[in-house]
Image 1 (cartoon, rainbow, N blue to C red):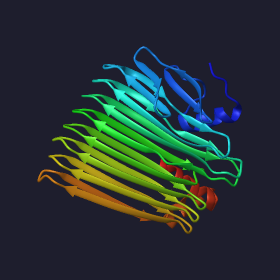
Image 2: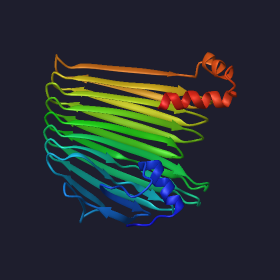
Image 3: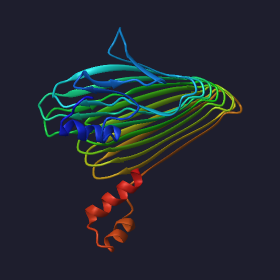
Length: 308
């Protein structure tokens, strides 16, 4: 069993909700090196031979199992690119927890770029949780650039929870997905930026089969002088349904750019985009202040509820 210090355990808690080594399959990466791995009877984790990364193979029919693959970095100046491929067999239903935490107390930038590809066979179902977290008081930046590719076979379902709430100085998130007949994609993104942080999210979803559906929703808060961009494109190539939504709170000198794009290539493609950007309503703050909260505490309560 791998051993971790208090800082490493705190970071594992933040990015993967791990208070101890998980019971199921896992691979933990720390400071660009393997820090522990376990496969199970139904989930096999192996190292790639050509690039840094993993192949995760989940047997058909696997139910109620999980795989955790967190990455933590506590040394300043580390930069890496990791490629992980997930092969999910027919009818499997599993939880996959990823995420990366960077604690940078030095003067050099630290960066983790992860490329995750998901191949779900017919009627497979995956809940994927990816959390990003930054800490440390160094001058070096904490940079995370995830790329996610999702390929859903007939009747497959992918539910994605993408969270970044604290400490990441610069991030560019790119997600592409291709859905066959009756496949379903659900994305719930939650972002908060502060200081001079920058966060850009790009989604491109191809609905290629009849009955395919996608629901991509981002909730975001931009504080101080931070900048966010939400760029979402839905492409309807069949009798499908697609919805994308950006719901954002802007504070201080923050800036938010929402870029919707809908492309219908079939007369039966039903695509919808919604966007709303605004400040916290003054009456909400006043109401909470009458209950004894300070203005700062009231804002925090509102933001926490919004991002929940």
